[in-house]
Amino acid sequence: MILHVLNMAFDMVSECTMTMLILMMTNGWMTKYSKIDMDDGIEIYLPVFFICVMVHICLGAFTYLEPDAHHKYTDFEGPVGYCLIAIKLGFCAAQYYYYSHAKKDIKRRSREFYMKVVAIGLVYLMSDPGLMIVSYLMEPWNRAFYYRLLDQGIHVTVQVFMFYQMKK
Picture 1: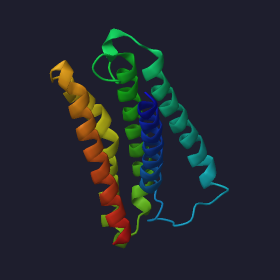
Picture 2: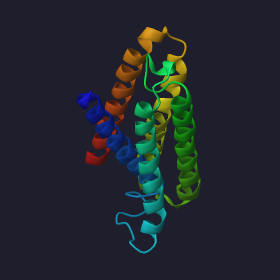
Picture 3: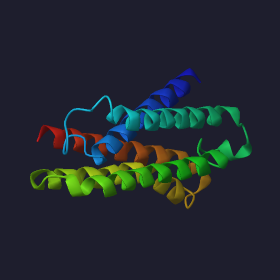
Picture 4: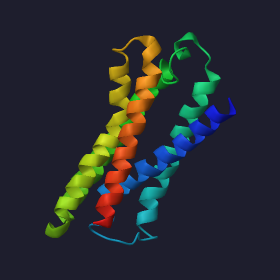
């Protein structure tokens, strides 16, 4: 039980960090500017970060507070799964909002890097909703295994790609 709680905590920290990194880079960090302006930038990112943290803490807590039958096979079924799908789609909408406002200011030499980051960020943000919807097509006793395997595989692939792009 304690390892499951630690796994959930570290998974939520990883989700929050990667979501904020993707949103910041989609907004133009490292392409339009390299330093975050503490006067203007912090007013944008801090509320989004706190919303992201609060949402992930609530989702992590709901998996333990709601011991209904739909948690028999995976943690993200029922109302918690539906909320997670809606919230991740909301983060995709935020990414599109940042993209639509930042794309015109990206310099030509940074455009290829920027488009790769936006695309891989979209893959990362859509991985949870997509895998949850696909997992409903599987046998119930297989859902948790394939969801975790594919989810962690996508997250590791995205992180390796991001580190590779930053090193390049």
